[in-house]
Amino acid sequence: MAEIASQQTTQNPLEPNFLMNSLHLNDHSASAESYSAHDDVIPTIDYSMLFSTDPHQASLALQYLAQLVNHEIPDKVFENFFKGIYEFFDPKTLEERKVYSKKDSMDRIRWGLNSSSGENREYIKVIAHPDYNFPSNPSTFSEVFQEYYKETRRIVVGLARAMSKSLGFEEKLIEKAFKLKSGFDVSAMNLYPPNHKSKGEMGLPEHTDPGFIITLVQDVNGGLQILSHQGKWIQASIPRHAILIQIGDHLEILTNGKYKSHLHRVIVGKNKVQRISVATLHGPSLETFVRPAPEFVDQDHPQAYLGMTYKQSLQVNGNHEIDVQSSLDQIRLSI
Ligand SMILES: O=C(O)CCC(=O)C(=O)O
Ligand SMILES: [Fe+2]
Image (cartoon, rainbow, N blue to C red; front, side, top):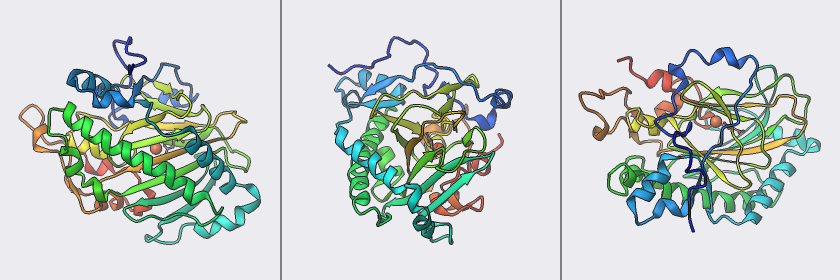
């Protein structure tokens, strides 16, 4: 029977209301020197719970936006995909992938390799939706990615519906507000540490991601840390083939701060084992004008974010669309 595995915890450090945006935080940086993190359990949600006919069950599941299991993506899909990523990042073909190095704002595929004290990762980012872009080598890589990606879109639409209902709105509110049918999705496939020597402990510095939600999968545990409400870094220990669901900036904006975007980072540490992760940022369509929905604004909750199109928000701090960098700093109103 479907169940929430760690329902026994009364106060979940990753509960939406419990999470905070670090941009309001100023006391967590002290602990950043050691990059240590706690081992609190990230609760697990059974995907079928989201569609429980008992609305209480469904909303219970959604209080714990965390890691999804029983999402019906076959193990083989994950295995083929991870294998494809390792083949792509083969040290022998490094020169070939440089063709995807940063060119201009029209890049639809972008490759990068950072080996510095600030970041240690090799990555390939692709715009997967509404138009599909993918490297042509290795030959089966695109096919295995598509299998995985098709499944994640199914899950994201399911999440949008379940979230709308649990917020007390009609099922399609979020789907329509974000025009998810033509949503702008970027997938980042990351390798830590890169095949080069790692220069320091930082895999990826702390950040939030734009978009509605972020789905994240990894091959082995280790490195990803998420900031809790209390400014405590939590080690993300994700069950095999579970999908970690993180809240993106634009859900924070739409809900006028009711749901907070998750601040996270990757610490490579002295880890000798390579790890791959795939973070897909599922966004509204580029033309969607995103602002706090009237349902979330009242006297006690004045509008706390500027409205702008998703495209503008991706470019407002000088970045290209494919960079998918947060611009919450520019969007948040000081009230
Ligand atoms: O590698 C990870 O676990 C996180 C990756 C990430 O945060 C990103 O690509 O935005
Ligand atoms: Fe991220």
